[in-house]
Image 1 (tube, helix red, strand yellow):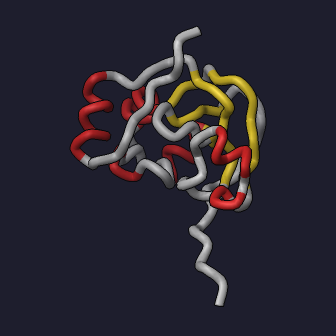
Image 2 (cartoon, rainbow, N blue to C red):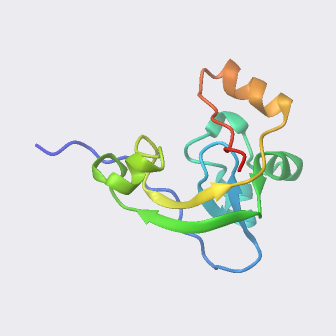
Length: 119
C-alpha cells in the first residue's frame, strides 16, 4: 500500500503582482489564497481573514518559482530544504525575514525558522 500523500497546497491562480511567498516555508500563492486558506505549512500563523498577519508573514519580493509534486522524493526539494512541506509552488529565495513576533510564534509552535542567507 502506498504512503498517503499530504494534500497539496493551492496552486497560484495567477502569476502577476498579487503573488506572495510565506517568509517561513516559501510557499507561493496569491494574496487572496493566503486570506482564504492561510499557509498549509504554517497554520499556526493563522492568516485566514487577517490582512495584517498576511502582510507580516508573506512577501511579494522573491526570486524564482519551483513546483514540487512529491517533495519527499525530489532532489530539488531536498536541496531547497522544502522536502517535508506539502506539494505546491515554492520560491527559490526570499530576501526578507520574519518579525520578532512571528519568530516567537514559530518557536511557540516548535516549528523551525531558518532566516534567508545574507549575500
